Image 1: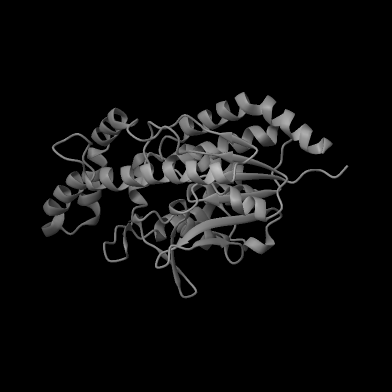
Image 2 (image 1 turned 60 degrees about the vertical axis):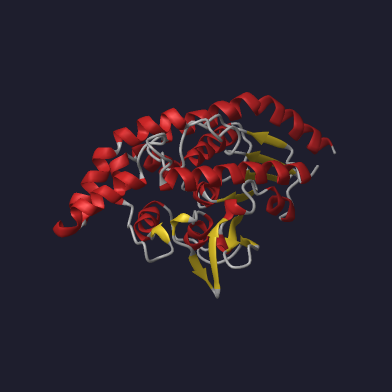
Length: 309
């Protein structure tokens, strides 16, 4: 009997995406090895780490991240179409992942991106893996878009937050979807206040270290205003932008999965985490593990049915 081809659809969700690591860990520990990996945004990044057999290395890196490390990776450039240009982050990722081409990977892989001018959904299936990842997680307003050929590409979560459809197109018999966008709207306000307060010092250091002396005072003022805790006077730039994207992705996810449902959906409970809480990897990975372990009996049962078919 032919073994069913198993796919994982790893969804968008910023820092909540470290939960994908925990999900993949549980699947692999129980002999469930995905043959197809499709990712949107952070899902494309974690999925790429798995496909080039660097998930262990990648896990250790995420667990070591502090907020100071994250700030150091922010190459701020307001002229690049986003708040962060992303070159420092790409270089750091390259230190931990081999610069493979997608067509050379042992596992079928697709990263979902969005064509900026037409809104077309783009499946990146060839070329340098790091370029596909970078295009897929180019969150509008935060990361600058990526030029690929003659097209500007941005975050895949804008059109397909949980990429079930490319998994099916690549020949999957059984699809495990990981949705990071459930229960996020309005659920992280108090956590965001605490997080922003604790990071105030890091933002001030950012201005002190990287900005010439005459511009330091205005830079500090701008950073505090841009990243201030929600609920203070009015929503900040990041609160409005990321909150709006969260709502949009939640609605798109529900609509797309209703029309093209996966075989099983895993929904880690991480709505209290923000898109930029990348220093919370331990919590995210643990919740990914918990969710996958809870659903493991159901996954085994459904897989057995697929095998009998």
